[in-house]
Every structure is written in structure tokens, then in C-alpha cells.
Amino acid sequence: MTTTLTEYAATGALTGLALGDALGFPTEFHDVPSILTTCGPWREMALPTPAYVTDDTQMTLALARALRTATDRGVLAPETLAAAARTEFIAWNRSPENNRAPGATCIRACELLADPGRRWQDASQVHSKGCGANMRVVPVGLLPGLSDEQRAGAAQSQAALTHGHPTALAASDLTAHAVRLLATGAEPTGLVGRLRSYALDHRTDYHERWLGDLWTRAGDAGPQEYIARGWDECLAVLDRLRDAVRTVSPETDPCLATGAGWIAEEALATGLLCFLLFPGEPLTALRRAACSSGDSDSIACLAGAFAGAHLGADAWPQEWAERVEHRSDLVAFGALWDS
View 1 (spheres, rainbow, N blue to C red):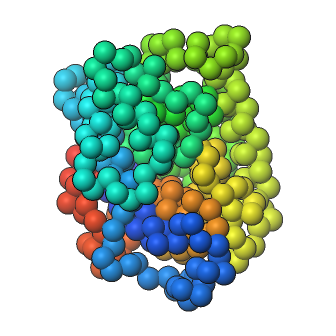
View 2: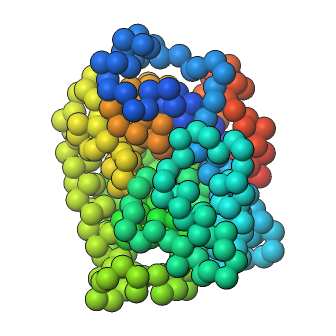
């Protein structure tokens, strides 16, 4: 089956991710009534000035740099990606700009990764499925030329460097897959069904080449039982999402339907819900995600990435796109992967 690439999908997705991050940064940790009191009607929310981003965009760019380094050396492979991502994540953790409310799991894992004698599997926080695993995975869905095995393995292994819970791995894989589907012309209608089919098809696939013996640290009977646990939680939230797309009012806090987004599978589902409620209105999708009671910056990050992958760079007003922090890096990676 042939696919049609969305024009400038990478630039659109990365820009949308950062814009969602910047819009949701001031609203994170606040309930919807407080957000409305501060920002006014949610459909009219303005991009803050300056448009600062959080650790979500910072870590997305760290992973983008790691992917560029790993592919500069040839075909993307587990060892090269793990080494490059480890270097970039440690550098992010030590950066003075790492002051945007970073997640505790990422901080702890990066501190352990900084020990050169420690295998990355021993740094992974195997009981954490925080959304830090999949809010940064979008570049894996945008990188051209990967096989299905490479994309899935890369999505899961970058997550596992910090978040080793199987649901964090499965949600990251699904996030990258959703971005890839949208970037290659998939219509929003039917997207949830395609993601469910993907989850069912890969429910017991453990990517040992990419993950090594990570599963042994989680207490499961075997690698298939370990990874199936993650896919089952993702399938459950996809069922909630399927119902929500049909029944939820756009005026309702999306977190009430698919979760607050602090954990990986809920961030994926609620970010997708905001996008699917407004597939042709990207700014409205961002505003709905930012005006939510949960992890608003991560939810809006993902909603923006999905919208940008679907609609391309023209989805975003130039006045917004030019003001967002790290604009030059976002454009550079977009140009690299759109060409």
C-alpha cells in the first residue's frame, strides 16, 4: 500500500509539540476553573510572552539530537541509539536550563545513567510509567527510513532508559506509531482502531535486541508477560478513548474522560482525544489540551504533535511559531526529516 507524506509533517509536529508545551506550561498544576479565571475563555487562550517551554520540549530535542548522532553513524541500531540518548539525557539533566519542573523519574534515572560503569538497564526505573517516557518520543515517529522493528524498538528503548514500566514502553511505541500514521496520510477517523489493532498485533512482542534483559528487573514470569502487561493497560485506555471520541463534549475537561495524563497511557489517550475532537482546528485542540486539570503541558505537547503531523507546518500561525522557545532547533530538525 502506498502512503502520501504530509507536507512538512516533521516541522509541523515538532512546532506543534513546542507550542502545546508553551501554552500548557502556565496551566499545569491548576484546575479548570482557576485556568479560566486567569486566562479567560479557553477557546481564546493566547500564547504566553515569552513562549517558554518545559522539560517536555527539552527532552524531545535531546532525543532528536541522539537520533541524528546515531543515524550519522549508519543504520539506526540499539547500541548506537542507547549510547547517544544516554549522553544527551545526562547533558539535559546537568544543564542549568533544566529548571522547568522536570519529572522525578527522569532526574533519578539520569543521575544513575551518569555512572559510566552502570548498564542502562540498571538505571531504568522499572516501576515508573510516568508520561516522561512518551512526551519526548515524537522524533522517533518522524525519522524517515526506519523499518517497523526499528521504529518500535527505538521508541521503547528510549523510554526504557528512564521509565522501565512496560506501559511506558507500550505507550511510547503507540505514540510514535500514531505520529507516523498521521505523517504518512492516515485520516483521524479510524486512527483509534488502527492503534488498537497495532497493540493487539504486538501484545507479546518483546524487543530483546533493543531492551536486553530489562524485563528481569520487573518481577514478571517472562519477557512476554512483562510487555503484555503494558499493552493491556494501553488497550484499556484506548477503549476509553474510543468511547470518549463519540460522547465527550468539547466543552468538558478532557481529563475527566481519559485521565489526567500524569502516566504514560493517559497522556497518550488525552492528547489524542484533544486532537480528535478538533482534527481540523489545531489551535483549538491545543487550547483544549492546555485548559485541562491534569498534566496540561504534556497533554498539549502530544495534541500539538498529532495535529502538526496530520496538517503540516501550515497548521500553526507564523506569529506563534516564530515566538516559541528553541524555534531554530525545531526548524532545523524539521528540515532534516522533511527533506
